[in-house]
Amino acid sequence: MRRVLTAMACAVLLALGVAACGSSGGSAETPASTPTTTPTATDTAAPGGAGDAGAGAAIYTSNCAGCHSTDGSGGSGPNIQGKDDLAAIVAQVTGGGSSMPAFEGQLSTAEIQSVAEYVANGFK
Image (cartoon, rainbow, N blue to C red):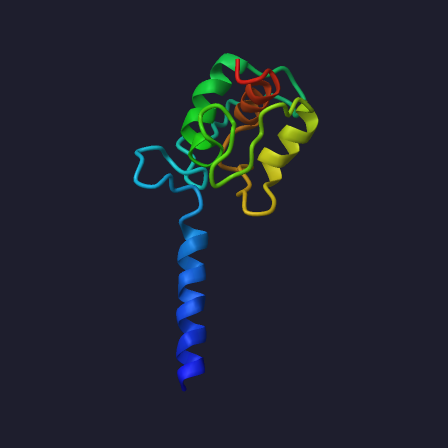
């Protein structure tokens, strides 16, 4: 019985730890798993199209900085400084992977492209 209770307690703690991914220890930043923008029907940007790195900065701050920090140096998510493969960044943001959530359907294609441009341009 004690082993069962211990296993259940571990499972609960693990679930809480996974749920906390993106939490920045009491900071007011929004975690990556809770995007604050909604795609619109008028968004017609094609994948791989030109993004807007300026708009990408605001999208990154709202959706990515909670895990990757404001400068991309990492936190609960990995360091993404120096990542400049635009197609790889778009694919990662779109489909997620590891503990990163997928943003497809939560961010528009243009928003994903813009945040990828921002990251690929060294957070400028």
